[in-house]
Image (cartoon, rainbow, N blue to C red; front, side, top):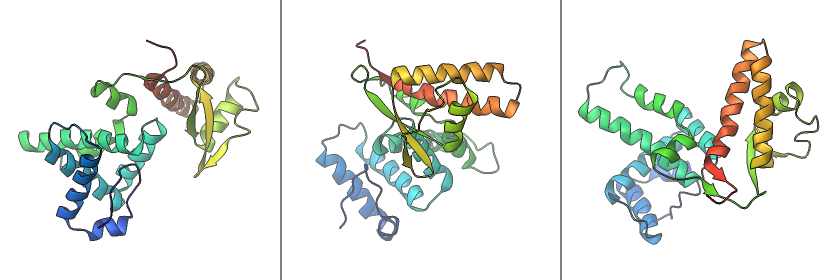
Length: 221
């Protein structure tokens, strides 16, 4: 039987070829190996499996949410936990409340749309992760986001010239000071532009950068 590691996506076809009991045992075995302290082992494994099933079944919103949470600083395992928190909330509503929408799954999908790494960390009581002062973080940007920073703000026109191509976007290694400085340029342009579409793009970019400032701290608290 395959070995499960939430840090790496299992092969979708092999995962879906297993029956539910096998998937549950793989997830449970991983948490036993890591000696994870869980309040409800069975529920934790079951929700883990549901999320992995949705990812293997290529449900676009779930896959997009996972990638967005990873871009916001979560590793794959924590991103699954964050998605699981939305799923558990939805399951609780289905059990204790009557459905108020024609599609009973829509509240879950809406919870995924507004889910952020920062919100999940706050909800779980996780404080900001301390990193060495001046350490850099991998910030994933779309090409459009790069162009907004480079061409529409007062940021250095050479911004991201040495970026690493990452899928359909780029990855730029930035310190928290760098991120805060760029965020300031983005905010200034958002406040001054008369183009409503560009303002919305800049606002979304500002929020994306804020996630790093909410998640990491390079000073001892």
